[in-house]
Length: 467
Image (tube, rainbow, N blue to C red; front, side, top):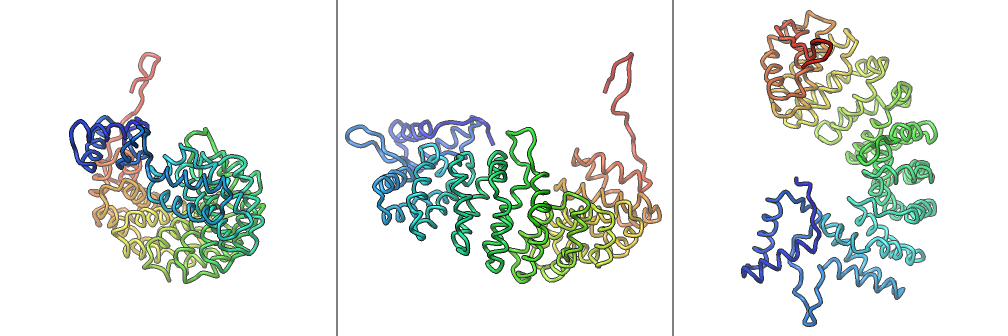
């Protein structure tokens, strides 16, 4: 995608020129304008690709539909007409959800203050308030910069006051999640404002409401992201520690999971959040002690046909296996056979193959006894089958190579059986196809006993370094 940007007005003028100068039909004019700008490397993701209404008789330019709806909403808010506000919120929210370009244009034209005012105006009317926060969540999707300190305070205060109102809590949780995706400053401000106990509290308060639990877990998980490229470093690790140590996050999530054993959507979200919290050795052990490992193994067995649950459970197992003692507990619980089964069952799914190989790779690391169990369970063969099924997926190739290396690095007896499965050709192909695989593939081939050309990356020549 191109990195150049243009204004909506520039695009609209190009479309209008195609219609008036070249007598194109509206749809053709839009297509031609899109091709013209994309050929110049322009990013049109934030541009509304539609024909603007022709100018009025007085020469005044007409607006795109979403801006007309925004004007109507602004008028209703200014007149404190709650019935009209509710109607326009619904229309505006629906248009915002259609595509990023619509809400981006609205955001540039002052939509946030209008929606914020609607939230304040509707404070005494629950039905309208629900629509207002739902609209705010839609507007913030992909543009969290819009949220200001007053908006942060409003969200925190409203969530505190929501109490047992599950629907209102859900709308607020969705706002918080959108506000924090790829926005480190919002995350830090909201954490300082006390959002973490509100999120764990929402899970406890609405423990039998699946959508609220799912949304709260998703919001907690976003607090542990380091996805904002505008800041040199974030507080992801600190936030994860605060969730666990100050808000008993592991217990809250594991207890919540036990109430939704039949809901794959909630379970996958809870597992994804648990894996983000496994940032310290003792946290991994605590997950086991709280029954989290048994829960994951049961989930893997019971939900083997649900790819999203399988992927998230594998990711969580990979994360907690960072603790060497937990590795033994995972193997002792019979998880290795289930991981191999998951890879084989979902061989066409590259994400599951990647996470499955990564989990086995962690279990094999520094553990020769575990390597024997993985080999006996068909782990090496499953990894090689994954490599064969996904030759273009660098992540799958990399994790499979690392698993093979871990299996043979302390157990040379496995080299011959793995080579007989066709490992050398597959690893050599991965090395040739993916530059990122070169180091791990070379290490795997070396430990398998294959001939590998070792090249000096840097050599000293007359007091300087030459590559």
